[in-house]
Image 1 (cartoon, one colour):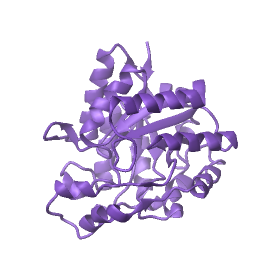
Image 2: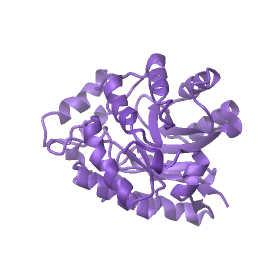
Image 3: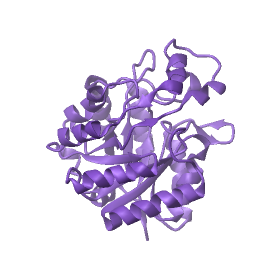
Image 4: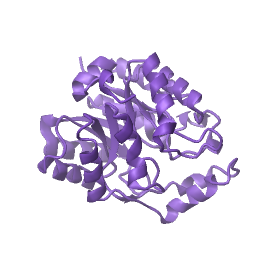
Length: 307
């Protein structure tokens, strides 16, 4: 029986507080959503932090520390910190939480790209905070910068911490970039390859896109990688289901999609975790526990983090 890792991304830099009342913004809300997602079956929780007053993305280690400490006290889940942060932040800002807090796992974007979130303006007409509309509008003419130098800087800065990476690949070329760093010996197997679908500027959401991404990763990395998928918006559960039928791991959560069904906002990341868990188990697969996920990804263990 295949064991499938569920990751839950409970908040992120794409959505703004005006888009859903259920999006966790305060430390307490992020903690509660993460713990609930873990209890629902997520072995990994992927975290961003926010200013509790405005909901603006906050990439300071001080914003993350109380959140990760509280989650660690209440759950054995793997805590995965972002180094993506927001496209408006410098690489050193984005790296800071992972560098200081030394998590078991951190996300790592594998290439620069157009990252278009401005179409969300069509669905959100009023905003609670003055930063939200310009933030979305700005993605019309903004590059999400992840150069070879940036990627190398993150890899080498965290190499002494024992932190491993959720390598986020938004297009086929990102897989070849990962292969480049593998060849240089800067990242070691097993590689946790998170294929990202449905972001404007990256690969699409057709079933053939999913198959092409996996086929390419299979050819490049063979048995040395663990494949996972996430998809933006309404495509989240459909793409996760497709990947699960192929034995892949999955990521859901309010960072990637605010929805649980047509026209229905998800009330929590845990609701999405429960939905995909039911599908996975109905396919005859089992959901991996945190202990099993650590073994599958060769993680260092929660006792060796810096929080």
